[in-house]
Length: 249
Image 1 (cartoon, helix red, strand yellow):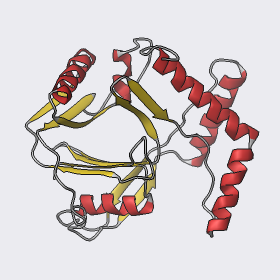
Image 2 (spheres, helix red, strand yellow):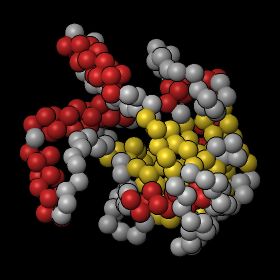
Image 3 (cartoon, rainbow, N blue to C red):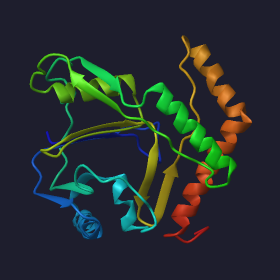
């Protein structure tokens, strides 16, 4: 399989999950420059309106396509990539279990001194009024322990799903790279004339018991800081969506 999706239904999260597999695409679309991003997205939209399935990604580095003031790092691959399929296939239970999960050793790319320096710079910028929110992230790099057998990447994806059940999971093999995405958060869902966003903010350590988890969740809901951050991200997305939609419509 070249792609797998396992999504919670955005409008009925407790209902059946949307689980589909995809074989050989009829077409692939890629944007290697900012000028190519919109044409690729237009082609994806046209294919979807024809009843085809489109699975792919849009990089953060494609952002200047929509706002030239944004500054991004140089990408290390296509800015946008999509595969177009004629049909979705049933996802069998063993679709990602064809190999034993190989062990992966992870390495940090942001040592603690660099992290502390970044936090100090962000706090100064907030205090100076330069910005009010930063999504600071740090990458991990991994290496297989031993030679992975065929299907090891799919097995790793299955292991990630078991560790992070629910939410929105996707596997994509572009031929040059493989994407394993396991997210609890819905960026947005677009159906007809309705756009739905379910942003998340606030984190807490897992407890040793379900009671501990419930206590942590209650503490998150009661925290003025966490609630303020959640309201802020909801307002941010509301503002973004209002640029392409009619408010209160």
